[in-house]
Amino acid sequence: MVLFLKNKIVVVAVLLATVLLLAQCSNNEKQAGEKAVTAEASCEKKPLNPNGDSELALLMRNMMSSSQSLKEKIKQGNLPETFPEEFLKIHTALPTDSETKKESFEGFANSYISNLQALYHSPKEDLSKNYNAVISACASCHSEHCPGPLGAINKLKI
Image (cartoon, rainbow, N blue to C red):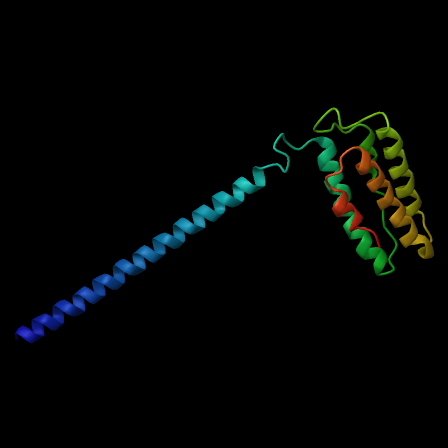
């Protein structure tokens, strides 16, 4: 009888330990999931610039993304589609730091837009050359105004 009682206590203890372990694991997974969602939400809200994302910074990130897509299309021999009219806002978009737009900025912006328009009207045989002219216009401006993205810009060349 004593052996039967000992076995019963051991079985109950093992079951209890298993239930507690599963409950703890379930709770940890739930907390980890909540932490991941919270971290995701906070990442989405954080701007890249600690001072906030300006119109110009957001526009230029869009230009970078567009350039990456164009690079792949052109490497595959495809013509670019519709000219991105929103890039014309380069002239009026407010920078993060008002010192960013020096007097020469307008000339660089005009060069970028001019090269971009030429790219969108290019025959297939001139696509790579005209695309690289757009990227060179970006690099020229950034070498004077905001050198941080120069490495990434130079990687865009075909």
